[in-house]
Every structure is written in C-alpha cells, then in structure tokens.
Length: 457
Ligand code: F0G
Image 1: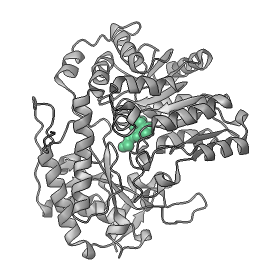
Image 2: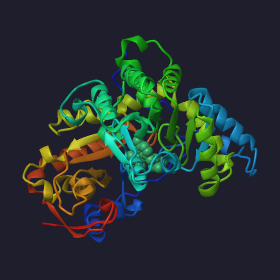
Image 3: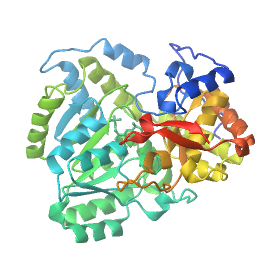
Image 4: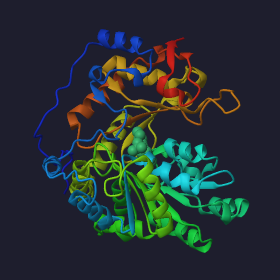
C-alpha cells in the first residue's frame, strides 16, 4: 500500500534563505510596484510561484557536470553530450541549440511563417503565437471543447480536436499550413496533457495531408507521466520509452529547457528535414551562436544533458505530479474553485468564481494576485482579462476566464511551503468579499500585463 505522505525524493544539500516580511512591508512593496507583481523585487517575495520556467533547483550531479563544461567555440565535448542526451529521448536527425524556447520559435517561424500562412496548435503559448504573428502568419487554437471548460474532468484536456483540424485544413488548404503543432502539456490550457491516442490521430491527419507535425515539448516528461497513469496501454511502460514514442510521431520539435529538462536556461529546435535544418543553422549563426553551442555556454549544455536524464525518473515524476495535485485538491477541499483536473506544473484558481463581486473589467484575477502577495508574500500570476482583454480594435472585453496561476518550480519548495501557500489562500478566501477591484492607471501598447500599473477601485 502506498503511504499518504508525499515526500520530496531528495535531501537538501545547499539552501537559499527566504527573507520573511510583514504584511505591512508587503502592502508598501505592492503599492510601490503599482499593484503589478512583475514589478516586485523577488527579495520581497516569500514563495515565488510566478513561473516554473528556469526557477527549478539543479541537482548535485548537474552542478558537478557544470565543472566539466568545455567552452570551445566549435566542436566542444559538452555539445556531444548534450546532443546525445537530446537524441536519446527525441531521435530527430538535427538538433539546433538555442538560449531558450522562444529563440527556437523565432528561428522556426521566420523560416516557415509569413503572410498567408496558418499554424494550428492545441493552444499556442504566448511567445509561440507572438512569433507566428510577427511574421504575418495566423496562429489558431484547436483544443477540444472540454479544454476550455474549467470544470470538465476530461483526463486529456490538452487534446487537439481532429475534426476541427480537418475543417481547418479544408478551409485554408494544405499548401498554406507549413506545420501542425502540439503543445505538451498544454500550458495555456491549464498544463493539461495530450494523450498518445490523440497524438496518433493528429499524426494520421498530418500524414494524410503531408503536413509536418511539430511538438512544443517543454513539459514532455510530465505529459508522458500522465499518459502512463491515464492510458491503460502505457501503465507498465518506462517514461523514457513513452517520450520516444511521442517523438516518433513527430517531424520536429521546439523546446524550452527551462521547464522539464531542469535547466535554468536553454532550449532547442530539432527536426528531420535536412533543408530546413540547414536554413535554421544559418539563422542560428546570425542570432544565437555557432551550431555546436547556439545560445548556450558549454556548462549549460552539460547541466542539461544530466537534467534530461533526471527528468524522466519515475520517482521524481510521481512526486512532481502528486505534489501539484496535493495543492489543487487541498484548495478545492477548502471551497476555493480551481481548474480541474489539476495539470502538471501549475494550479489555476478561478478568480472570477471566487470573487463574484468584482466585474471582469475590474480584473478579479489581479485582485486575487495582489491579495495573495499582501496577505502571505505568495507571488502568482493573473491569466485573464489583464493579459488578454485588450483587442486589436482597441476595445476591452473580458477574457474567457479570469484565472490566477500558481506555477510550481521544480524541486524547489517542500510540502510545508505548499502547506503555507494553502493557508494563505484559505485566509484570502475568508475575507474575499472585502477585496477591491482594480483599474489601470498606465497601460503599455503591447503585452500590457508585464508593465501595466494599477490602483484599487
Ligand atoms: N512554449 C511553452 C508551452 C511555454 O510554456 C513557454 C514558456 C515557451 C514555449 C517559451 O519558452 O520561456 O524558454 O522562451 N513558458 C513560461 C511560463 C515563460 O511561465 O509558462 P521560453
């Protein structure tokens, strides 16, 4: 029988102090930051759940590997190790190393995007969409309907809808669709996984129309763990094998190594297409670096080679996914509405449901984000009307949902830190009726959520 306690499958070897602050200090810091958590100093944050990107803890073996970093401009052995580790899980012919995920997206879409091009995804991440739209191409989300319903308990809410994809290809024509993308797990849709059955179905369509299939594979290991847990065919399979099977269905991938590969920086673009690879390397040399290091130092390549190996450990993934579910389930049991079922890397609180007295155009997600910080020094991130409300025609409309994301950095916080986060959320919930809405006092023209300024209404 399994024990109930989820414990971290590691001992702590090096510690980073947390600076404890008082509520009065946090209220002053929040006011000075104009009620935008992106403007806070991280030293004023106690538990930082802003993102799971680049914020994980590296292992003893990763730090040791850093000492082996060979910083040769060309042909470094660190590159050979990195390339072998990538190809062990993702056996694509060509690997193009970049400094992070969006640099891989920039190269890929500069080459295959452009006006008149259409790129479908289950749900494009913001930087993917921005890199596509920057070239004049159109980015479209074709996730299944359940993926947009916070209460749906579908086990694979990240799946792409095959019928929507067929209709999309019929409408735009295969010649105008340079590739189909699948984001695993589907970050913008709540960190929800894509099933192997769905990947196979999308692969069938891609093969039938001769359109390449690419994975945005940032959270590939978490996705593979969900496949192992939820698709009976995979119950006894090794996660590394499941990842190889995912890769075998695709023609290429983009990667942010700041997520599942357990790096603080890094990424890559990989593919089987020789011609596209040659063009990508030319772009790489212009914007990132020589093809055997790209955007990275030799030491980063070493740390990632080890991180990729650790990322597919079953003990690690079991703990990782269970600990995210523990936070979601504890909040849910306290009556706090969260997106169900919990995803891999984050818990999403439904702020619109939690703060029904705040109209969407007074930003309930922002109100909750501010309160979590002021009450307990917990930094989450609004994903709602502040992020998506401003339309290209200048009007402002409520986003589909007003969520607050609590993203969990990998191997960084212990269960007692998470218990503290739960207590902070419960305390905020107990006085939620008194929380104010917000209005914007400064709004930048693009990506407004990063630098907007607010005041309470
Ligand atoms: N694709 C997905 C699915 C992502 O979640 C991210 C980053 C990227 C691409 C871009 O990678 O940051 O290395 O350039 N997501 C982070 C987040 C920033 O907080 O969810 P990057």
